[in-house]
Amino acid sequence: MAVRWARDSAGQFHLQVTAPAGTSGQVWVPLASTSATSTAITSGATFVQRNGLFDIYSAGPGTSEFSSTT
Image (cartoon, rainbow, N blue to C red):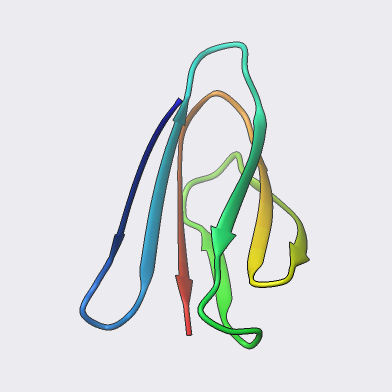
């Protein structure tokens, strides 16, 4: 599994996760506050739940991208 992340000058957080074929798992996207929102930018990831300052998504093999804002 490979993970890349960055925060841009506007404070938006970007996360890219690449999972090998035949795998699946959860992606925990960090949030800046309880009022922040996140988005799955690529298809194939499904929102599962919020846990504290994280939105949790289910993702399968391939590359999934997410962002979160304040």
